[in-house]
Amino acid sequence: MSGTPSPESYSQLYHQFALARMPWSGYSNFYRWAEKYVNVKEKRVGTGTVVKDYSDAREGYIMRDINPLTVTITQEQAGFQTTIVEQVHRVPMKERTYRLARRIMRDGVIGKPGRRVVLADTAVKQMSKLHQIYSGTVITEAHGPVTFDRSKADYCVRTFKRKTAILYKFKAEGDMLKAAYDGRWTDSPEVFNATPDAVYIGQVQSSREGVNLSTADDLVFFSIDHASLSYLQGRDRASYLGRTVPPVVHWLFARHSIEPLIYKLVREKQDYTVAHYRHDKN
Image (tube, rainbow, N blue to C red):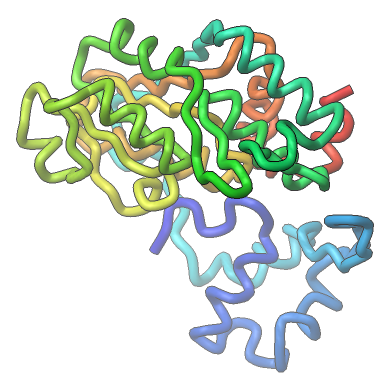
Protein backbone atom coordinates (compact mmCIF):
# COMPACT_ATOMS: atom_id res chain seq x y z
CA MET A 1 0.00 0.00 0.00
CA SER A 2 1.20 3.52 -0.73
CA GLY A 3 -0.02 7.06 -0.42
CA THR A 4 1.90 7.95 -3.57
CA PRO A 5 1.61 4.92 -5.88
CA SER A 6 2.22 6.89 -9.08
CA PRO A 7 3.89 10.20 -8.20
CA GLU A 8 5.38 10.82 -11.64
CA SER A 9 3.08 9.07 -14.11
CA TYR A 10 0.04 6.79 -14.09
CA SER A 11 2.12 4.45 -16.24
CA GLN A 12 3.84 3.37 -13.02
CA LEU A 13 0.64 1.63 -11.92
CA TYR A 14 1.03 -1.13 -14.51
CA HIS A 15 3.98 -2.72 -12.70
CA GLN A 16 2.18 -2.72 -9.35
CA PHE A 17 -1.03 -4.30 -10.60
CA ALA A 18 0.83 -6.70 -12.91
CA LEU A 19 2.06 -8.51 -9.77
CA ALA A 20 -1.55 -9.45 -8.99
CA ARG A 21 -2.24 -10.40 -12.63
CA MET A 22 -5.34 -8.21 -12.62
CA PRO A 23 -6.97 -6.19 -14.07
CA TRP A 24 -4.46 -6.31 -16.95
CA SER A 25 -3.71 -10.02 -17.19
CA GLY A 26 -4.48 -9.95 -20.92
CA TYR A 27 -1.30 -8.02 -21.70
CA SER A 28 1.96 -9.97 -21.97
CA ASN A 29 4.17 -7.02 -20.92
CA PHE A 30 4.24 -3.28 -20.31
CA TYR A 31 4.80 -2.39 -23.95
CA ARG A 32 1.70 -4.27 -25.15
CA TRP A 33 -0.27 -2.60 -22.35
CA ALA A 34 1.08 0.83 -23.28
CA GLU A 35 -0.29 0.52 -26.82
CA LYS A 36 -3.75 1.10 -25.31
CA TYR A 37 -3.07 3.00 -22.08
CA VAL A 38 -0.27 5.41 -22.96
CA ASN A 39 0.23 8.20 -25.49
CA VAL A 40 3.73 7.08 -26.46
CA LYS A 41 6.03 9.93 -27.50
CA GLU A 42 9.71 10.44 -28.23
CA LYS A 43 12.26 12.58 -26.41
CA ARG A 44 15.97 13.28 -26.53
CA VAL A 45 18.20 12.38 -23.58
CA GLY A 46 21.88 12.69 -22.80
CA THR A 47 23.83 13.78 -25.86
CA GLY A 48 20.80 13.58 -28.15
CA THR A 49 19.76 9.92 -28.11
CA VAL A 50 16.09 9.53 -29.03
CA VAL A 51 14.07 7.25 -26.72
CA LYS A 52 10.40 6.48 -26.28
CA ASP A 53 8.60 8.36 -23.52
CA TYR A 54 5.86 6.42 -21.72
CA SER A 55 4.95 9.04 -19.12
CA ASP A 56 1.81 10.43 -20.81
CA ALA A 57 -0.63 7.79 -19.59
CA ARG A 58 -4.34 7.84 -20.36
CA GLU A 59 -5.59 8.46 -16.86
CA GLY A 60 -9.27 7.87 -17.62
CA TYR A 61 -8.68 4.37 -19.05
CA ILE A 62 -6.41 3.38 -16.17
CA MET A 63 -8.61 4.66 -13.34
CA ARG A 64 -11.67 3.01 -14.87
CA ASP A 65 -9.93 -0.37 -14.62
CA ILE A 66 -8.41 -0.05 -11.16
CA ASN A 67 -11.17 1.82 -9.29
CA PRO A 68 -12.79 -1.43 -8.05
CA LEU A 69 -9.41 -2.47 -6.59
CA THR A 70 -8.39 0.76 -4.87
CA VAL A 71 -9.34 2.82 -1.84
CA THR A 72 -9.02 6.59 -2.16
CA ILE A 73 -9.08 8.72 0.98
CA THR A 74 -7.93 12.25 1.76
CA GLN A 75 -5.86 13.11 4.82
CA GLU A 76 -8.83 15.04 6.20
CA GLN A 77 -11.07 11.98 5.86
CA ALA A 78 -8.40 9.86 7.56
CA GLY A 79 -8.43 12.15 10.59
CA PHE A 80 -5.29 14.23 10.03
CA GLN A 81 -5.72 17.52 11.88
CA THR A 82 -2.82 19.49 10.42
CA THR A 83 -1.56 20.57 7.02
CA ILE A 84 2.14 20.76 6.18
CA VAL A 85 3.46 24.31 5.97
CA GLU A 86 6.30 25.00 3.51
CA GLN A 87 8.80 27.84 3.79
CA VAL A 88 11.53 28.85 1.35
CA HIS A 89 14.81 30.30 2.62
CA ARG A 90 17.14 32.06 0.18
CA VAL A 91 20.60 31.78 1.72
CA PRO A 92 23.36 34.17 0.60
CA MET A 93 26.40 32.12 -0.38
CA LYS A 94 30.02 33.16 -0.73
CA GLU A 95 31.04 34.84 -3.96
CA ARG A 96 33.21 31.83 -4.79
CA THR A 97 30.11 29.64 -4.98
CA TYR A 98 28.50 31.82 -7.62
CA ARG A 99 31.78 32.08 -9.53
CA LEU A 100 32.10 28.29 -9.68
CA ALA A 101 28.47 27.90 -10.74
CA ARG A 102 28.92 30.40 -13.58
CA ARG A 103 32.02 28.58 -14.85
CA ILE A 104 30.21 25.22 -14.86
CA MET A 105 27.29 26.66 -16.81
CA ARG A 106 29.55 28.54 -19.24
CA ASP A 107 32.56 26.27 -19.73
CA GLY A 108 31.62 22.89 -18.23
CA VAL A 109 34.96 22.68 -16.41
CA ILE A 110 36.71 24.17 -13.39
CA GLY A 111 40.44 23.95 -12.68
CA LYS A 112 43.56 23.05 -14.63
CA PRO A 113 45.33 19.76 -15.42
CA GLY A 114 47.37 18.51 -12.47
CA ARG A 115 45.20 20.37 -10.00
CA ARG A 116 41.71 19.79 -8.60
CA VAL A 117 39.44 19.60 -11.64
CA VAL A 118 35.64 19.56 -11.86
CA LEU A 119 34.47 18.28 -15.24
CA ALA A 120 30.90 18.65 -16.52
CA ASP A 121 31.00 18.08 -20.27
CA THR A 122 27.28 17.29 -20.67
CA ALA A 123 24.14 19.03 -19.48
CA VAL A 124 23.36 16.14 -17.12
CA LYS A 125 26.77 16.48 -15.45
CA GLN A 126 26.36 20.24 -15.21
CA MET A 127 23.04 19.75 -13.41
CA SER A 128 24.68 17.39 -10.92
CA LYS A 129 27.65 19.68 -10.28
CA LEU A 130 25.40 22.72 -9.80
CA HIS A 131 23.30 20.70 -7.38
CA GLN A 132 26.45 20.18 -5.33
CA ILE A 133 27.96 23.66 -5.74
CA TYR A 134 24.85 25.55 -4.64
CA SER A 135 25.13 23.84 -1.23
CA GLY A 136 28.86 24.44 -0.84
CA THR A 137 30.48 21.15 -1.92
CA VAL A 138 31.60 19.55 -5.18
CA ILE A 139 33.10 16.22 -6.23
CA THR A 140 36.37 16.70 -8.13
CA GLU A 141 37.70 14.29 -10.74
CA ALA A 142 40.82 13.01 -8.97
CA HIS A 143 40.62 14.35 -5.43
CA GLY A 144 37.08 13.45 -4.37
CA PRO A 145 34.61 15.78 -2.61
CA VAL A 146 35.67 19.28 -1.57
CA THR A 147 33.81 21.57 0.85
CA PHE A 148 34.29 25.27 0.15
CA ASP A 149 31.20 27.12 1.48
CA ARG A 150 29.54 26.35 4.82
CA SER A 151 26.93 29.11 4.51
CA LYS A 152 23.92 26.78 4.42
CA ALA A 153 25.12 24.67 7.36
CA ASP A 154 25.82 27.79 9.43
CA TYR A 155 22.38 29.13 8.48
CA CYS A 156 20.77 25.93 9.81
CA VAL A 157 22.49 26.24 13.17
CA ARG A 158 21.53 29.93 13.51
CA THR A 159 17.95 29.61 12.29
CA PHE A 160 16.38 26.36 13.48
CA LYS A 161 16.07 26.20 17.24
CA ARG A 162 13.16 23.77 17.59
CA LYS A 163 13.34 19.99 17.11
CA THR A 164 14.91 19.73 13.68
CA ALA A 165 15.44 17.03 11.06
CA ILE A 166 17.67 17.82 8.07
CA LEU A 167 17.76 15.88 4.80
CA TYR A 168 20.72 16.19 2.44
CA LYS A 169 21.62 14.79 -0.99
CA PHE A 170 25.40 14.32 -1.18
CA LYS A 171 27.70 12.70 1.42
CA ALA A 172 29.90 15.79 1.68
CA GLU A 173 26.83 17.82 2.66
CA GLY A 174 26.10 15.31 5.42
CA ASP A 175 29.69 15.54 6.68
CA MET A 176 29.46 19.34 6.73
CA LEU A 177 26.18 19.25 8.69
CA LYS A 178 27.47 16.68 11.18
CA ALA A 179 30.48 18.90 11.87
CA ALA A 180 28.20 21.90 12.39
CA TYR A 181 26.05 19.94 14.89
CA ASP A 182 28.96 18.15 16.55
CA GLY A 183 27.70 15.98 19.41
CA ARG A 184 24.02 16.74 18.81
CA TRP A 185 23.19 14.87 15.62
CA THR A 186 21.92 11.38 14.95
CA ASP A 187 21.06 9.40 11.83
CA SER A 188 18.73 7.08 13.75
CA PRO A 189 15.02 8.00 13.54
CA GLU A 190 14.39 6.07 16.77
CA VAL A 191 17.05 7.99 18.70
CA PHE A 192 15.83 11.26 17.20
CA ASN A 193 12.22 10.69 18.24
CA ALA A 194 13.25 9.62 21.75
CA THR A 195 15.76 12.43 22.41
CA PRO A 196 14.35 15.95 22.94
CA ASP A 197 17.42 17.93 21.81
CA ALA A 198 18.66 15.62 19.03
CA VAL A 199 19.06 16.83 15.43
CA TYR A 200 18.39 14.24 12.74
CA ILE A 201 20.73 14.34 9.73
CA GLY A 202 19.92 11.86 6.97
CA GLN A 203 20.30 11.35 3.25
CA VAL A 204 17.12 12.13 1.35
CA GLN A 205 17.10 8.92 -0.73
CA SER A 206 17.18 6.68 2.33
CA SER A 207 14.95 8.90 4.50
CA ARG A 208 12.14 9.70 2.09
CA GLU A 209 10.39 6.32 2.39
CA GLY A 210 9.22 4.60 5.55
CA VAL A 211 11.22 6.77 7.97
CA ASN A 212 9.31 8.22 10.92
CA LEU A 213 10.45 11.73 11.86
CA SER A 214 7.13 12.59 13.44
CA THR A 215 8.57 14.44 16.46
CA ALA A 216 10.24 17.04 14.22
CA ASP A 217 8.91 20.57 14.40
CA ASP A 218 11.05 21.60 11.42
CA LEU A 219 11.99 19.36 8.49
CA VAL A 220 14.79 21.00 6.50
CA PHE A 221 15.79 20.10 2.94
CA PHE A 222 19.41 21.18 2.58
CA SER A 223 19.03 21.24 -1.21
CA ILE A 224 16.30 20.48 -3.73
CA ASP A 225 16.38 17.10 -5.46
CA HIS A 226 15.57 16.98 -9.18
CA ALA A 227 13.08 14.12 -8.67
CA SER A 228 9.51 14.93 -7.72
CA LEU A 229 9.38 11.64 -5.79
CA SER A 230 11.93 12.96 -3.29
CA TYR A 231 9.81 16.07 -2.82
CA LEU A 232 6.51 14.25 -2.38
CA GLN A 233 7.69 11.51 -0.03
CA GLY A 234 10.35 13.47 1.84
CA ARG A 235 8.00 16.26 2.93
CA ASP A 236 5.61 13.75 4.52
CA ARG A 237 8.21 12.35 6.94
CA ALA A 238 7.14 14.77 9.70
CA SER A 239 3.40 14.20 9.28
CA TYR A 240 1.43 11.66 11.30
CA LEU A 241 -2.11 10.90 12.41
CA GLY A 242 -2.98 12.65 15.67
CA ARG A 243 -0.54 15.53 15.29
CA THR A 244 -2.10 18.84 16.38
CA VAL A 245 0.77 21.25 15.58
CA PRO A 246 1.48 21.69 11.84
CA PRO A 247 4.95 20.49 10.81
CA VAL A 248 7.00 23.03 8.87
CA VAL A 249 9.04 21.97 5.84
CA HIS A 250 11.90 24.33 5.02
CA TRP A 251 13.77 24.55 1.70
CA LEU A 252 17.25 26.05 1.67
CA PHE A 253 18.09 27.62 -1.69
CA ALA A 254 21.22 29.49 -2.62
CA ARG A 255 20.18 33.06 -3.30
CA HIS A 256 20.37 33.96 -7.02
CA SER A 257 20.45 30.30 -8.12
CA ILE A 258 18.22 28.05 -10.25
CA GLU A 259 17.08 26.08 -7.19
CA PRO A 260 13.72 27.95 -6.87
CA LEU A 261 12.95 26.98 -10.49
CA ILE A 262 13.55 23.31 -9.65
CA TYR A 263 11.29 23.64 -6.61
CA LYS A 264 8.48 25.08 -8.71
CA LEU A 265 8.55 22.05 -11.02
CA VAL A 266 8.80 19.25 -8.45
CA ARG A 267 5.88 20.77 -6.53
CA GLU A 268 3.85 20.21 -9.69
CA LYS A 269 4.91 16.52 -9.68
CA GLN A 270 7.38 16.99 -12.54
CA ASP A 271 11.03 15.98 -12.57
CA TYR A 272 13.57 18.67 -13.40
CA THR A 273 15.08 17.56 -16.71
CA VAL A 274 17.87 18.53 -19.09
CA ALA A 275 15.37 20.46 -21.23
CA HIS A 276 14.37 22.57 -18.23
CA TYR A 277 18.00 23.17 -17.30
CA ARG A 278 19.00 24.30 -20.78
CA HIS A 279 16.17 26.83 -20.72
CA ASP A 280 16.85 28.09 -17.21
CA LYS A 281 20.62 28.52 -17.37
CA ASN A 282 20.17 31.14 -20.08
